[in-house]
Length: 450
Image (cartoon, rainbow, N blue to C red; front, top):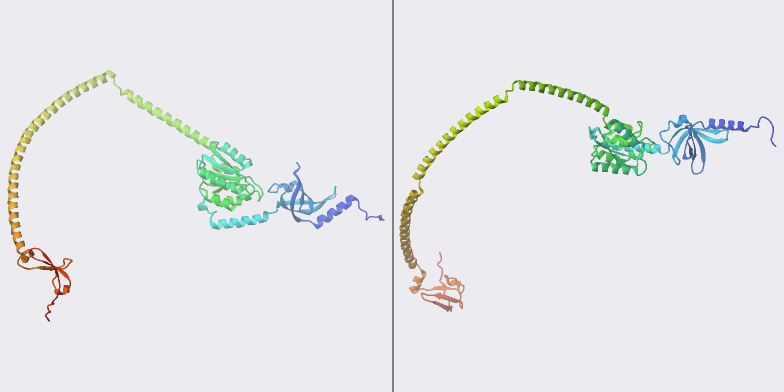
């Protein structure tokens, strides 16, 4: 049975008391979960449900707080929120009033970012001495970004306003997600291979650390470092930094700032052009005035054409007379040279020389014949004398006196009885013919003892 009295609450009183208890007990808590049922009405407030595998809780984040969130949350995002537990009295719904929000993996990603930054910094990839200077008078820029994002629109708008003559090559890539880094690496290699542009802009608009994470890829950082073309990193808003910002040759706070960095202001060019045009006009005017003065001076010194022609005719007559006299003198000189040459030719006539050489030739031929005869006679006498001497010492003469030469079957001359033995066949060469003999007995001569 219910008891009457002040212990009975109205629904409003109960909800108020529950709200007070929740807000006193849970003044500030951090909760991690997945976003679902996200609603963003025109008021600027956000309403969503934060859930895990087993439970869920309603959440509200008011406009004064949503403006401080650096990323745009969406359905399925894993986030960490900070706030106080409260109760929506009108419905009696338990809810979380959120005053701060960040991606759930931000802490781990931030740690990975710091570690990679320290590693690449130690290797010198951020060193100033390795950064390339940005070219001047740029004619073409390679832009690596999403073809549908705000970044390409901002870049093209700035270039059109500042210097529309600069041409742009767009290399469309993903700038968020697992494949984004590899696509950006491919685009950098392709821009270097094409060799059309003088500089590269690589970037995108702002976002959460997860959204920008592809620009913290180590392979992308090394590709930027080794790029032949200088690269301007234009990632995120002014407060966002990525590894690409540190390794690039230059960093722009926004894509728009990158376009301004690489493009001259056409208004300044117009001012300079106007100044050059003014100086050019003045120079032309001065030049025309000088030529006018020169023309006036020349006109004053001009003579009548008839006077000029008479002077030329007189000069021509004088030159004609000089030419005739010169021809006459030249002919006389040639006649004298011809007469002298004829006299010399007669003196050195070939017939005289030929007769002289013929007499010398006959004399030399006779001397040659006499010399040959005398040489042959001398050589014949010497040959006969040598033959007599040779015949006197010839072995054949010795054989003719009754001597013989003994030889072995191999035609070796036998000089010692020790060179043969009984039964050997020897050959005896005599004055006329040769004998084949068989040794029956060998007598050795005793050697005298010294």
